[in-house]
Length: 113
Image: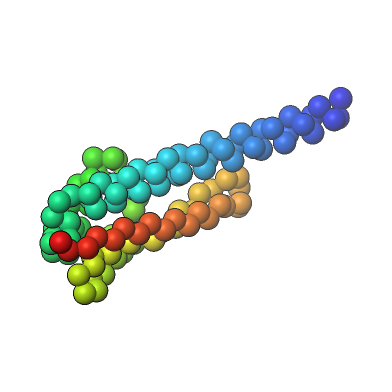
């Protein structure tokens, strides 16, 4: 009997962690997709920083991403290469004082033609 309770406790623990963390990974997948969509625009390399931020912001809004802090987005230009990177962390409460910290990094390059 105690063995079944232990298995049940482990199963419930895994389900709890999955229910808390899977939405974060789904949201990150949308962030990655938005960045990829931005880089596939024809004029991506010629866009100004403001245009890139505006376009990326609208793509994130369309995908209902509201938790991404603005300081997580960095735009770098070197020679004829434009690089947009997104680095951010998400802290998710699991149970009581136990938190999970998830780090995500995405980078997209584009060369001027």
